[in-house]
Length: 229
Image (cartoon, rainbow, N blue to C red; front, top):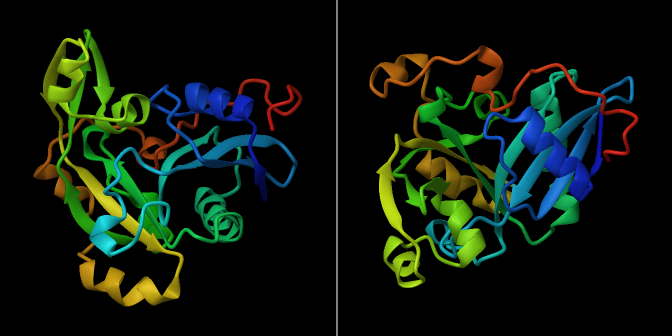
């Protein structure tokens, strides 16, 4: 298995075809994943996050914390956890200022972080979340923050948008230190990994096990020869 920097075309195609969200997030760095047969399997995407406070809880500056925003894979990869591990190693070289990676498992989709637990991320608890309905379309606050510079319903209303607040179920939050000096801090924030039983507390729709890892295992459309890199 190997990873290389992904093109914008590859990012768009994988996010729209291989990920359950069917949306392209704001991406700063992304990597195309190839299996041992050199078949393209999709992308792993990182972004700076939609909030300027993403680094604040860890005493870091904006730009020192990055968010894993998508693992959009088609199921042809030998190992999803290996693709994750390789991406984390590469990002240390490509973004040396980044000291910590954050990601979320969406309980509303039945996810609880299998992939993060398998790659030794640290679970820090739930993040309270809500989506907004903007002009009749459901939007995630992080997406709105990237697009408009704010995810405040009050500010968006001032801009002339019709906004309603839609409460959603919490997300499981995971962090991964790239800088060894942050390991003690991260461990101090650690909580026991959530398991499937936790979904009895947060009832959610049951999804296929492949989707619990945040990717869609739908067989690939023709992708190895269409210039998607």
